[in-house]
Amino acid sequence: MNGYRRLLGTMLLLTMASGMAAGVQAASFFDELEGHPYRDPGDTNGFASPVLEVIDTTEMAELRGGFSINGLDLAFGARVRSMIDDVMQQTMVEFRNTGPHVISQTLTDPTGNAHNVNPSSNNVANVSPVGISLPGMSNFSGMALNDAKGFTAVLHQITNQAIIGSVVSNASDRQISNQIDVDVSVNNMEALRSLSAHTRILNSLLR
Image 1 (cartoon, rainbow, N blue to C red):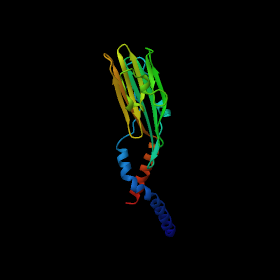
Image 2: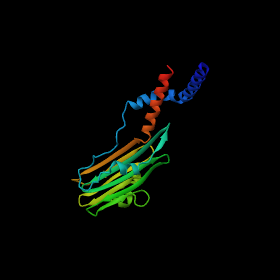
Image 3: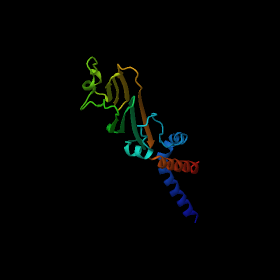
Image 4: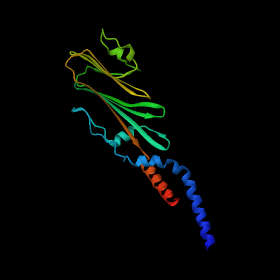
């Protein structure tokens, strides 16, 4: 009987040791991870405008891209909201291993004087009035408004490294805003917490 107990104990130790190879090395990381509780990335903040529709958490999850880094299944999404007086443009972007992808771009324009701006079909040079030259911004997207107040363009450029915002205007008495919200979540957080708990049990048994 003692021989069977020794054999069982040896097999248990070998099983635990195989899990420790990856678990012990990651223990300090999981300690830090559990020190910052996961929170729902839902966002209810936005412009105080009757034309603004807040994207809920479920819809944002569908638009959000992502990739994995060292076992973390990360998802990134961004909303770029630009407003010139009562005109609003919203751009939805997801980030993947291949880079940023524009999912949608909507323009709400009660004036009829605004234009979507994008590098491929309607860059800012095409909508700029005489006397305004913006050759260095041909790769920017956004919107432009030209009316009795003057010309205003709210632009952004999204790359793998940054989201850059810019405002160009010769108009007076304008209300201009440009808001960028970046949403980040860890999709496999519960699996990581389970692995962290398993690692702690193994550590306590081997002490």
